[in-house]
Image (cartoon, rainbow, N blue to C red; front, side, top):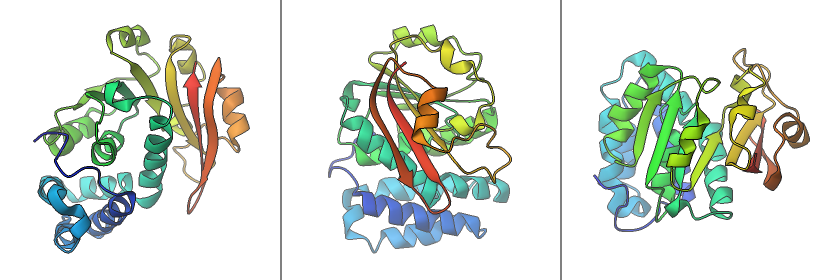
Length: 247
């Protein structure tokens, strides 16, 4: 199935409602079929309804543990953070001509949302995660629907970021800076590389080993030669902080 479906972009409110329904169904032990039923009552889903239904069908093959994990990946805070990223980044570059390298890509929710929200999504979006299992699930559930979404397992602290030179208009994206204890991974990214970084102040999660308490702290920890955007987003349980600029 093509990444671009006639009928244009999904409205942000429809994306939020659908992912909330999907997360709720998966979290409570279902397979997402309530989300499929919800789709049939939503005129705004229109010509993309079959596409979204295929996604729900793909989730039916996951184990209960995997469904719960996917439910977290599409919860409200996760989705709002990524929609914010897509909106802000699209103001600073032509994403239709870009290639995205998504570090800590998990199941590939950012590329999924980019395909839903952008009339011309990036031609190539590569998700890299240290856990090969999530990449396998992402490739089966999301990559099978969108030929522009790819997966590779790898440790972002050991990547050779010179590979970016082979990506046309490459953009490095890390929405999980709070998970990375290594202080030196950022210095491995080539100077001048366009990048997007997100972190948060949710210190209650034991996996969050490198939180920040303000966007200024994120700027100090991840210095850039030029900053195109710096801001914060208030979410239900945390603040999300984001930088867009050149390393």
